[in-house]
Length: 200
Image (cartoon, rainbow, N blue to C red; front, side, top):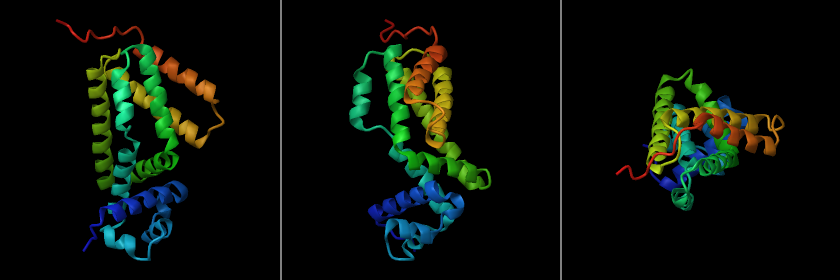
């Protein structure tokens, strides 16, 4: 029977993320997770039905930890909905994701593993679709310039920029990265008009 201590489970999943980032999917074993979490041998196997369960929960936990805090969301909502604000939001996004380096690297490992595990692929597909939909809904409700396609294109562009930054950090300087973020917003959002927040 699986254990139900939520704090211990979260600590084990966080340990699994660290193992995935450092050792890759092949290195993710219950024993490695127990060692990383500094818990007695056999603990992880008491919390997860199997390795697929652990992989799936690690993927969900990465997205959970990448969410902005309430203070950040409130500040974003209070900002003027223009292209400059959009650029700053994208810089904050890239910084937030990049700060959780092991989480993003673990997510890349999970995506590769999902090509061989249909159940994991289904879970990640659902989670990524939900994330894209949430970003589009937030954007449409914010009054920021651009449309749903612009949001999706920026997600794709910045995902690869983050991959470059986390795996080959010498490719672009910090100044180049900031300039690329501004250019991506400018070129993808383009001359899109700012939606009238009060069409009446």
